Length: 178
Length: 145
Image 1 (cartoon, helix red, strand yellow):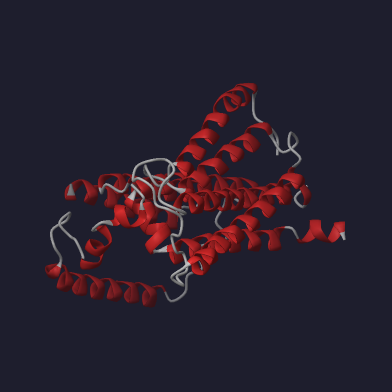
Image 2 (tube, rainbow over the protein chains, first blue to last red; image 1 turned 90 degrees about the horizontal axis):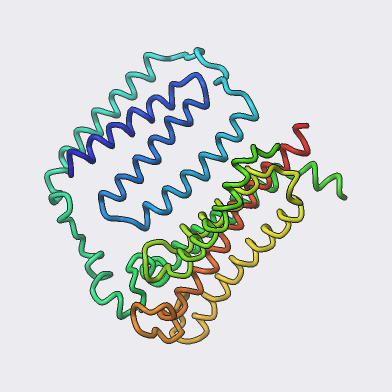
């Protein structure tokens, strides 16, 4: 289980690095798709079907958006190769990576084995949640009853995104009508 | 945007209705099986996006569609907030209070207001994703001629 997850996460890291360095934007999008769809497999392995459904659908739709936009504009990445301060950037990145690895291995001693991790708060949610919310699906019960504010915030983010896209893209159409 | 070949159009005619129905199923059974408003709404939006991609932008009246989705999205999130505020008025002074009778766990009509939240969040997500897609398509049609 841990080995399988590690292999998939390794694939995700390779895909992300390739997406950063690809010259063709379409292949960068394909590499970003590797990251998203591998995350779906991770969610399925960790027994989170709700998240897996949301992730696979949203990943597909956003990939369609981005492919459509890339095909209609430039496929080449612009202004590449003008990197100043390369030595400084690389040394800062290496330093941060070493610091992260050091503190992670300090913290990893205190974690439980994968799968046996049950924080105190989760137990309080799980005990009798079906009776409290009346919902057979515990995830929906938590999302819409205990954590209603989170769901409202997510919906508000989508609303704001739609309003922002309309504001930016529809200026010309609205002006002609007026 | 041009439509695709006849094969794609025929397959789209056959399966887009099924995708739409599956999205509705995911939304309405959100409190029983995995899924919920977000997943189901995204699937419903995907059915419409498939239709637009396959048949091209000439087949549909995009501006009318965009007005409709924009209004649907705004009213759906308004209804969610009103439902939550009614919970505050109905007792307990708690936002997002579950004030309807809970019913038996596992039945379709149970869990109080959670199915209503699922339905309206699903409407909101579907309409918002579709609005963004339609805005891109109309921008391409109008500005990038």
